[in-house]
Amino acid sequence: MLLYTIYLIAITAEAMSGALMGMRRNMDLFGICFIGTVTALGGGTARDMLLGHYPLGWVAHPQYLLFTIGAAALTALIASHLHHLRRLFLIVDALGLVAFTIIGCNIGMEAGVHPGIAIMAGVVTGVFGGLLRDVLCNQQPMVLSREIYASVSLATGALYILLNYLKIETGLASMIALVAGFSFRLLAMRLRWQLPVLRGEHIKGFD
Figure 1 (tube, rainbow, N blue to C red):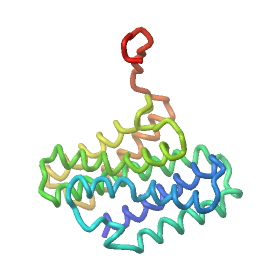
Figure 2 (figure 1 turned 180 degrees about the vertical axis):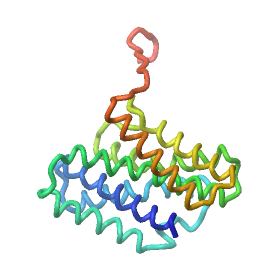
Figure 3 (figure 1 turned 180 degrees about the horizontal axis):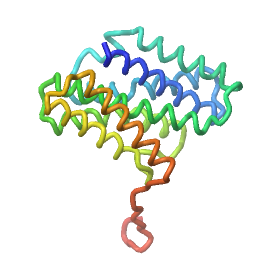
């Protein structure tokens, strides 16, 4: 039940982040809803395809598709009453990132894959929707920039798998990983933690 609640929170948060990005790119309502839906469901779709987990989540449960469209449309309608959209975008994206990571790890474990693959299933679930959102909106993907983003997903997934290995109850493990991962991402944004950037201007022959 807790994981289902986390999933609803995750798709709502990611649909909102996609809608906000679409609005920043001056898209119409269809574009906003499309970007919100791709952001919310893209990571889970990629994960299910990689794991051979069929039918896809939103195909088996069409209500999730309607839910994400509704969340994106509602965000578009109330956005004019929201201030600091940039900050709101980053907060809801952080929540979606860690929540999706936990869900992806759990599905990987249920599929019986190696713990390392389960962690990667969580990372794909966490980052791929945002990657699609940024590409479609002609924005440099956060997962490929120097921000601490994919690293948050990786750390959250590893923590969740470790807690399960230690036989911590699933609900408690989910909450611990959710709070820890979300706090990690917020701290990374607040303190501007970044990974080193490797400059390639001096490398010849790859133009």
